[in-house]
Amino acid sequence: MPYLEIDGNNCFYAGDPSREGSPVLFCHGSGGGHHHWVYQLKKLPKNINPIAVDLPGHGRSEGSPSDKVDVYRDWLHRFSETVGLNKFVVAGHSLGGAVAMAYALAYPKYTAGLILVGTGAKLRVLPAFLEELRRGQIPEELPNYLYSPDTPEELVKRGREEVAKTDPAIYLADLTACDNFNLMDELERIEQPALIICGSEDQLTPVKYSRFLEENLCRGKLEIIEGAGHMVMLEKPDQVNRAITNFIEEVI
Image (cartoon, rainbow, N blue to C red):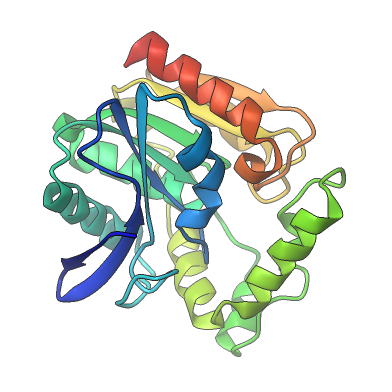
């Protein structure tokens, strides 16, 4: 599995940036890692080249998590330069979607398009969650917001175990970054085509967040995945991959 050095830290990513196909750079959400994109890494067609990162301080990457979306945005740009990506689709889930939109605004000539999964132009966090995290405790209710009621129990169990094993400081940094994020008045400046994906049962970033993106982005297209929650790319990977494939083939 490949590592590279950014800012003096070893950073992990999955995929092969030199492979043929339309490059899509996947960025995970709060407390997550590249493995949240496992079905995109393994099952997208060969004309799409997926690369998924572990943000600093997440997964297998060294460094520290940040409480600012713009720090992750600029780190992602240094990553893309280091691996030689010139123009690519930026895909992000939740916090990663915020990073993707911020990236498109700061680095438009590198951004071929956006894939925004379970995210929004504003990502306010429950104050009680942040308060518990400041005390060094992961909110007991957090895993309940991640999956739809119809999700197989085994997937929910793995999700709970992952949340429990994650350092609360990572969630505090990431969710603080989310809480301070607000691009509601800037979306019209994003000119690239954007695929917006949301689970119909998403409790953290409800469908209304995605509808706002569709209505205010210049070239936004919304795909609602029925029966999925916030972790839609793990819950309904085939439907998500179909939407991504169609988007890449139609507009990229």
